[in-house]
Length: 433
Image (cartoon, rainbow, N blue to C red; front, top):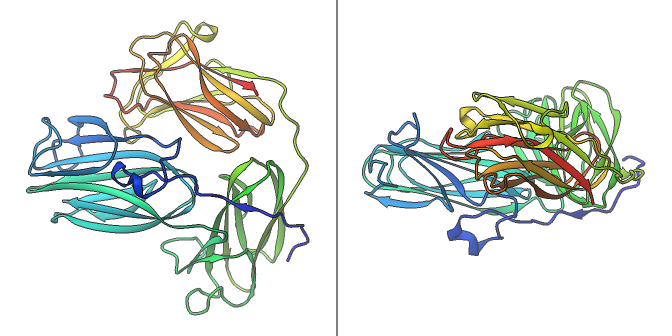
């Protein structure tokens, strides 16, 4: 294949799967950084329209209301509900079990994996869905027409990615639709000449494929190499390293990036137009980068603070770091539009403890969701701003690459009643550890 010296790798261990409480004893424990509860919204109609009449958190979706109601404000018939929850999982195929009476829809991120939006007696549906390592948003929608009302959801790990590449093959060049072949490949070292990856299932021309895998390697700088005929794209921990998505004879591409200690996610995409079909992949270690020497403070007046938004207004107030801070009223959910702010540090490679400053202000939220993007992934931290006014609050210790990819983000989505709370955006500090 290629002349690069291969690294010995240790496959990523499954670190946890979120399960409803009634299934917790049957599977791994809830991972540390998943949302601990579902955000639940109930409507007094079957179309999920208007303002919800009940907004609350629930530990699980395991309801059998029979002929009753989810609450005094919700009618026993002709109501609907929506649940949202962010979960963190390791790569694998997950089996979702959904029991409903009546209609139900389930999304994982932007993918609709179950659509049974129709009247029916209590029925259980099973759906297998592959998830890559990382955070995923699960959205469940439900309506009750008349009679009994049931809504239950759970999921278990059906199969892990294991020590191989998870390969998906498509009979088009754009990775569209459902794969015609899904299999585990020991390595990505293919020269199909003018043939097919699997005659009878996959075209010899005009096909595409994607491979995903989690690995564990020592922290450091690594060089990745792809040989392709025709197009290829390579992501490492969500970063697009190689983008060669065009027709070409067999060509070699290399790119380097810092890989943190722990789980590293790799995704390679490929397409074959006509003629010869080649795709090969490997990596090797490169030199180590020096550790950090300085801390950094970014406040909302800095050019390193970026803000954007959907529907709410941005406001300013005196106080906090540098005697000013930004704030906005809280929003109900991501689907209704929301404001967000993001702080980018000027740091070098190394470990940092991250602090957020909470200024003194009126009606602050109890559920500010700070997200930290770092070298090992993405971590959510929920801060009670009203209880921590005038203080620096630690969000934890993380490793940052020092290449501009790390940041802290905060939105005005708090899952509290809209415009009843305020969310303060002031300063974030990175201290070397």
